[in-house]
Image 1 (cartoon, rainbow, N blue to C red):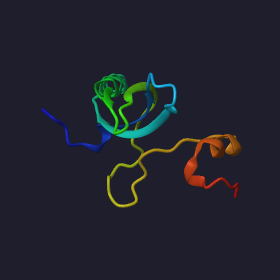
Image 2 (spheres, rainbow, N blue to C red; image 1 turned 90 degrees about the vertical axis):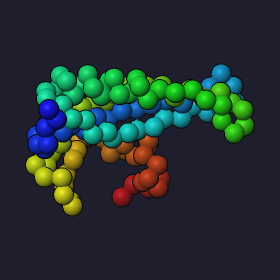
Image 3 (cartoon, rainbow, N blue to C red; image 1 turned 30 degrees about the horizontal axis):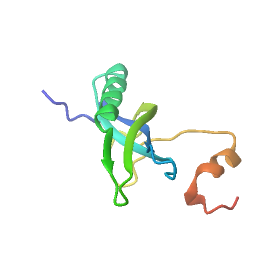
Length: 114
């Protein structure tokens, strides 16, 4: 029986890597935030890892390069933070101490320090 309670929802932070045997291909990474329903922390981690593996794929792109997307790492699996998934609900948060390091990889920051 599938549960409908909010207490068994988790968010998994997953990193995938795109690679190619073509030497002109520049590696690319994708960060995904995925909802996982599970009965325990252990089950949530196992489901996140399995889902991540299931998403791996290989194809030829428009220029004929073979592209392989593979799991790089499951970064975190955590219970969602809000008791109610409604407008404004907080799903995930993390803390860090080095804003400059964060800024170097986050393209949405526009290359400037606030």
